[in-house]
Image 1 (spheres, rainbow, N blue to C red):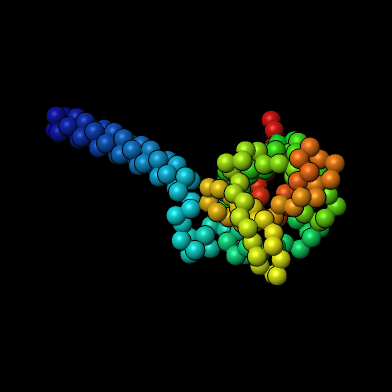
Image 2 (tube, rainbow, N blue to C red; image 1 turned 90 degrees about the horizontal axis):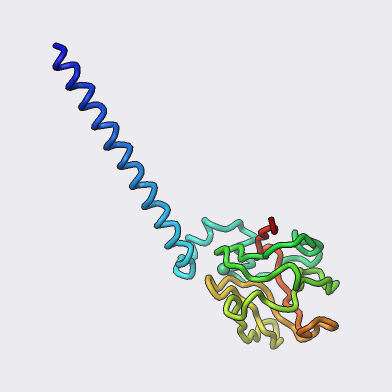
Length: 170
Ligand SMILES: [Zn+2]
């Protein structure tokens, strides 16, 4: 009887250990999958994006919409930190390059790195403008205009707040 009981305890312990190590492996796999997903955002389907983003974020980032001027979260936001892509989290603009252009959208005079934002000629709405998209996930951010008067570059990256997230400097 005692032997049986001891065996039961041993077996139970082994079973618990196996379960524990299995769940650990599963967790690691989930982390790896998440990392892969983060770098493969440009391969998400439109259905995936609809799941991932709010309707307004989807309209602006994926359908190249524009938020109403003076309505966005970051238009008058002056904390120190880094603005990231709302679609994929890629770092796009530094707060020190943000300036008050009075146009109703967050404005920056340069991106954090030229490789992070892609500039594309845009002929929509009967105008020729330079569209700015996230280089990683191709999400629409806004446009860049040569009227950043008084800034070091003379440029104004006019960006929709809804396309951005913010990482505050610790
Ligand atoms: Zn992105």
